[in-house]
Length: 419
Ligand SMILES: [Zn+2]
Image: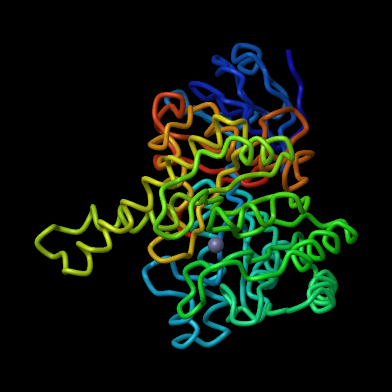
């Protein structure tokens, strides 16, 4: 007989994937008490629990995985088409805060129990994080970078994080650390911001100063890098993570630069390709009846499909060279809605040729370590926080499974689908 304290739940899934590359375990029960996983028992032993009659949750046709971690999102962005510049011209800062909270809840319902915000205006991500942290509403754990650091007129300059020169960059990072950021994000090249000149945004000494200052303050630093030249410019700085990770300049084919990829792998730079940032636009168009497509839709579909092909090729190549992948959606950007963002990103990783066990690790145990929260989340193990997702399909058969979320537990609480 096994005895537990009050208010236990015993969940009996069909299979359990613990978030490492280990194979599934079957015929087990995961025992929750409060916010914690207090045990994982053989199912027959769990059936014999007598004290306090644990609530029995039969999930006999569901697949249990740890709560998912999305390392690249933008809470302040709509994810329904408009660029942030347009959103900010239409909405008050108060409305953008409400949008941020709504996005966080959409992510949670989709199984994302931890997310990292990669750039925001006016303290939106910080305030949403604090509101949830204070327990006012059940939401995902949120890590923030505040405003992304960019050069004057650089990518996402509307966030307000412009800084030029070593001193200004160090000052901005110190200022943001004072405001409570969890990591530093730096825009190392141009991206999708309208009117920003292509190419790198900073000088070599500026990249280095950002990395040195972040590390001096005990913060990790990730860089947005959308060109091959950009990757070469920052690879030796000691950065911790890279977003988008493109191995090609504008109008070029991906480079198969083994030396560069192996250097990123050796340095354990955590590589987040955000395949859904534009991939979600293809999903949106696939759902739109063809007869309703405009000429712009047709040209966008062609342009984005071509870009996606290059990105898949790049990701696969870097993976084969030993680079460590972490899953991120860029939710908020264009048509990447928080309710589908990470599921689309993981599906597209499968399309890019990444093996299914690696996809699960990239969205659970590996980012937990990267974000320094692996003492609490990222794997299903006794003593960990009870962040759990039950899927209708087996994620080792198809990555479509991540879009078939049945139930989500956040710190032991069942997420109400009506939030
Ligand atoms: Zn982004």
